[in-house]
Image (cartoon, rainbow, N blue to C red; front, side, top):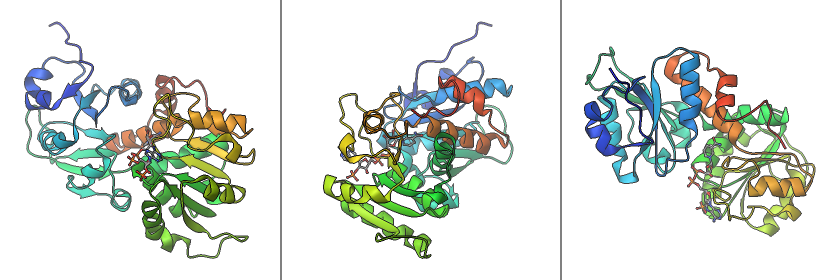
Length: 327
Ligand code: NDP
């Protein structure tokens, strides 16, 4: 029989006619990423390399699913013999309200980036409805990325996070759980930064720091506020979407950065994102978000298959040569 190839991306209509859409596709599609847009996602190349290396005869594909289609798409997936799904923009927060079960971390973050579908026994074709279990691996992926890029642990750092959306929430919770020295959340909408800081207040009750500044602070994403904080920060993390477009300026101009600050941009669409370029100009060490993408994906693989992810194979599939990729 002639092998049928996968298409670039599947849609809700394909899920509704899955027998036809996925007929004869080899290896069979059992994993994927839902997003809108989704064409840019690097997860298929990374996860398929891992599947192949581990001799798991299954395939991971892209699904272009719009916000209004998420509930239907998840309901369909739960009835098919899928193993798991990743969620990217704009689905992470909505998915938290649609899964059957949330692990403790995903519940606190309020966002899901990986779903595992549990069913009593896996059959073929249309199976009985499975249970959707939601996880969030962004925070732990971030922590591993920082250790790799800068050879430091979050607990030893004074950290400033730019942003208060889904990624920022996952990163901030991880910093709090690992008892970082200090955390500053800076956001365009200051109320959201304050809300996030308030949620994390219990983690920072202990007497750790140090100097004239508070251990936990929310500030507006404005030059004057950031200028004041920079002397009291070791790691600056961009978790806003500024930098996704090639024409974006850096969220922080080079004149506000300093050589002592390590800079991590969660954006990975370019090796030198606008923030990474600004950091270099300021003489600071910097890395883009490819390592976080790698580790959040490896953690999702481990949730799905209960076996260690082949990190170096996945890194190579992302185009990484060695570790770390700090510039
Ligand atoms: P959200 O939409 O949840 O949050 C976006 C954040 O960016 C908000 O804090 C928002 O501020 C801020 N923002 C957006 N536009 C502007 C602007 N023009 N000026 C100032 N602030 C702005 O997105 P996510 O948290 O899901 O994603 C954020 C980034 O993290 C993305 O770039 C994504 O690529 C990256 N990411 C990387 C991962 C990796 O593995 N490397 C994993 C997950 C995410 P406000 O609250 O004021 O609207």
